Image 1: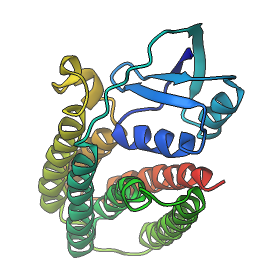
Image 2: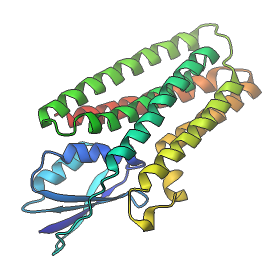
Image 3: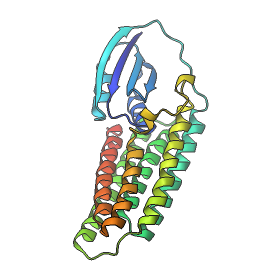
Image 4: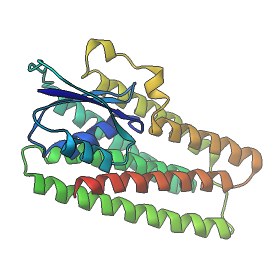
Length: 264
């Protein structure tokens, strides 16, 4: 058996881990995948050649790069029986905040919150595909991934159109207080998801590490919406909200493209 270590420079949170797991799911030569999110490392244990595995990792455009390959005698891998339960927990948290942020975003007229809700929905898709496709065929998983990816892109495009309409039209200022309060709670929710999923790792990684949490795209987005809320109030302009909304919509489309690549 061989062991290859990849550096995944854009693996910021557990949803990227799940994307990689789904992408590599159909490769029978893989014996085990070991993820180190804080250090952005993936260790693959496999039999045979690395070519197909490396190609699949690179296709996801997560900055995957092979670091080293060596033979190994390790054949005993711990399986986490609670993984499915943990995935259900983070799926519920992400989907609940999708509804909360979408609703409050429409009420407060904040495109930042609406866009962040779609980012939460994107994470829900990733966890949902993993759960609902368990025990199903690879074709079924790919079909679900394609539907999720295209739906996500469609929502993001609608969001872009609304941003343009508000940018060139006379629109009431978004409610900055709702933007800030809801984003603070979303920030806490993302921290909870990271903590819940890290509990499934080894004892050494069981605690939330600042290096992991504050490099997560989800957390950076939440902080961006909070800052935009303060700027909306201080500048009396909706432009900061529209700018952060545009940035998040772009990230949502990038995430959708990655999901679509699972379906290839």
